Length: 263
Ligand SMILES: Nc1nc(-c2ccc(Cl)c(S(N)(=O)=O)c2)cs1
Ligand SMILES: [Zn+2]
Image (cartoon, rainbow, N blue to C red; front, side, top):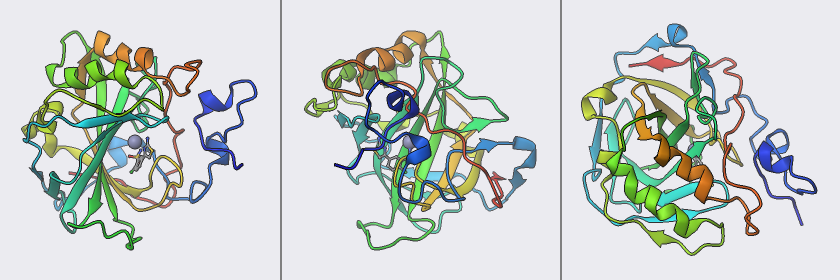
């Protein structure tokens, strides 16, 4: 059967029969890929990059969360959506997931002036109000990317997710429900969300469709070290729990002929 895609750390496992990043299928070998290193002084100020309007992000809900073998993923249904941010339409929030390492400086997928962060959180949105799956345009998806740093304060808004991790340690674990939390509380303060970078790229997982309008916020989220360590302690890539889930980070891709903008 065709080998499934995996991250480098998994491909290096003895007799792993999965495809690492250099062998990822689909559009993964094309030239408008993600993630990238953002060189802040080369980012062009674009005054159309207005603040976002977050709708439904303030609803306290018991989100369903799963280990999908690549990350931990909160399913957002379609009660939340964003407008503004120079997006051409309203985008429905679909899922939230994270990327991380064990090292504080190599867990983010994007880097800013060469700096990687401990984790990176992605909120994946789809254009429009219905699931117009037919569309394959360059801006079918909008991902909001947040860098995560480790600090010495517990981030209470992340406790429901951290406390759910032991219940979904294996990819086959049944989905679990988190205790109540609202997305808004998991993000940096709204007034900090006016500063962000913008470029056109791809999904950072196969099939790497080049359909994503990326927004990388400057203001990082802060988690306590204990919270951060839970991700690479509680979650596994595999059923046998041989390989803890960490370094689920795609290598940096070439910017090529693209321009990065900033608000
Ligand atoms: N764990 C998994 N993540 C995805 C996924 C789907 C859509 C997107 Cl846009 C992304 S990403 N990393 O580019 O935000 C990831 C599939 S499976
Ligand atoms: Zn992601």
